[in-house]
Length: 218
Image 1 (cartoon, rainbow, N blue to C red):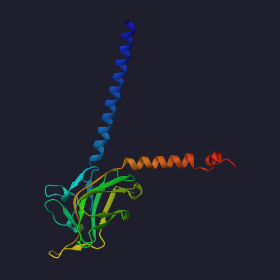
Image 2 (image 1 turned 30 degrees about the vertical axis):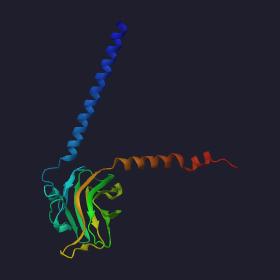
Image 3 (image 1 turned 135 degrees about the vertical axis):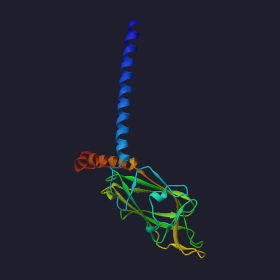
Image 4 (image 1 turned 120 degrees about the horizontal axis):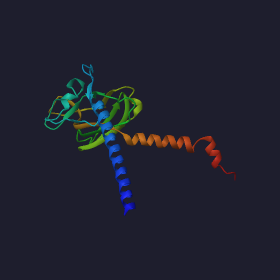
């Protein structure tokens, strides 16, 4: 019985330590998260719009897209459920706190605007003037593109959608590429993990010494 009591006390001590460590970790996470979403007072972003990773830019009439995009940069006026890209180039300039050297993922929901004879719309996606993907849009869908860390030399992201031959509807006067419902940019932890694995394989399996070690003469 005494042994059971001692074991129970040890168990409770371990449990208390685990709870304490968890609480300290949570407090630390909240502290750094709060720092990542707060901006210095009177900070001048210039032509860039402050953006917190993981925020969805909603292009519907009740959404928040006016905080992030402008008709001066190739975006159409507000429509009920979306905004259209107008002309060949449509840009969004975002200031992402601590975005430098981070792998990120772009995700956007959209559909292509094109003449019936073409049946699709080709969009080139650029991040800081580096092409990161060519996407074929037909029906409404969710499309993704990786933004590698090497294009983020600072916290500024110039996102550009390029349409080589925007479509002018016979009943309108605008040349359109696609209709966008939403845009979201998030941390890409998967790409970072893949880089680490590739680096480990390169350093541990494919050095000259390792090749000689595994080589067996016939």
